[in-house]
Length: 100
Image (tube, rainbow, N blue to C red):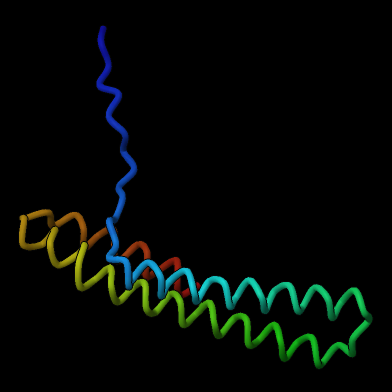
């Protein structure tokens, strides 16, 4: 019995600008996380660390908003135009996970 070994993972080709913007945002978040680690290593005062963690969370939330918006404008819209209604179920599932 032969099996179809098609990959079930989807990909998204991004423009150079979109790619650069997303990577820049992630680099800033990564820097914030390194800064938080340094604060812990240097025994910084708890509230100061918590404020920085809150800022890192806000930066990740901002990243999510940008990525989700782009996903809806491109992937979701294209799939709907092509009659792939199950994309709405996928989007709903993603939103449920994001809103936990």
